[in-house]
Length: 354
Ligand code: MRU
Image 1 (spheres, rainbow, N blue to C red):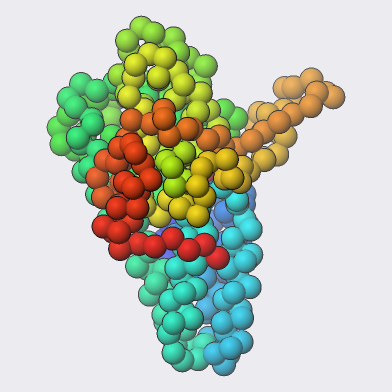
Image 2 (cartoon, protein in one colour; image 1 turned 90 degrees about the vertical axis):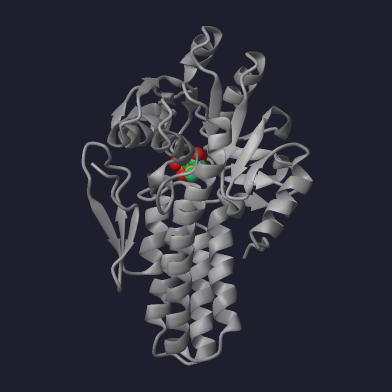
């Protein structure tokens, strides 16, 4: 089965695959307002940095529809309010703020009343959606340089089609190598505590026919020590100017393990994940997630009553542990600061968050 579209604009509503139900059920959640879209992002119906950016852009299109009969100033006010609601849904992935800033800037720079702005905003959301798929395919092509025949690759969380508007970033790299006829074996970290690896990446790789083995997060060292892993590729939620990279909790540990075993560790991400306003990863906001994700498994309490819980959703991998950042502008290597700047210039992007 081909992987269905993560997000689908139906003309007056946004349909999202409900990623909280996969793989047991493939069903969609419909959003008709920016508030419903923000709630879908917060509740992780849609998740993954690029996907939440594109969902937020469509959330702006829903706000613009509501403002279609308003004069210009009132319509812009509605769009700004929607942008701040959407931006507050999740803190770590910078693609969210980037997509909102991009759509809002386009509306502010365009003339006309609410009806004219609705056309502009919807067109911009469509452009970001389509550009994300094309960008991920370019990341996949760039990744061929580091994904040889027979590669034994470990990945973490889900950085696949479901985490994007389509094709995926880290899984996109695996997919491009598979499509190029290279035989791979993929080790899929289950990715505690929310299981994006077990539920989503494993599902995608099965659909794609890429050989894969599910392992617990704690098994990575064991398989690395036995020579069963020869590279790691993960996605990213925010990359600071020096290359420090925030990604799903557990990523930093994998990078340390990879260094200890002499295994190259790659990050695959679009340039929209760069945040050059942050000199290092130390300032990246880290989402603290609900305690129930640790204490309960699918509604059933497993943890002892009364124990304290810490549940950061992300960690920061220092740039010195990263062999390369695979982007639509090629594979970037240290020193990362000039490489990130050059990649942004090459893709004609500038970063400005709301
Ligand atoms: O909490 P999530 O599931 O949104 O976290 C997702 C990740 O950490 C992904 O690895 C990252 O966003 C890259 S997605 C292409």
